[in-house]
Image (cartoon, rainbow, N blue to C red; front, side):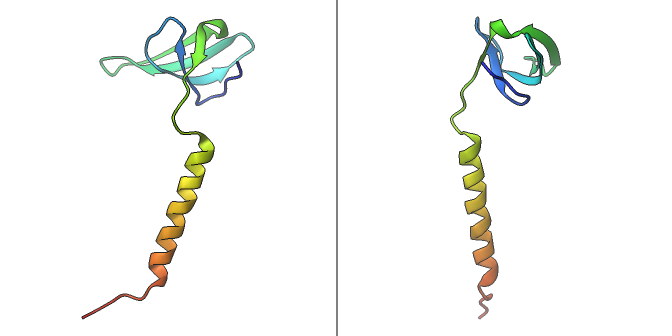
Length: 83
């Protein structure tokens, strides 16, 4: 499994979602927010983690952003209507 900073993972045994901060050869440094809002950081072996698959890929997000930008541009091109 290939991980990069920003990926969201979890322990194979369950638990909170963890955000990958740094990836080394055999270990991954992760951050997560505890139940009371405390921030934790731990370095874990790669073998105990699995990536959480999100509903939206980065490509889909980029397409949505581009479409949203076009709509704003169209509105600016129309003249304002007054009574």
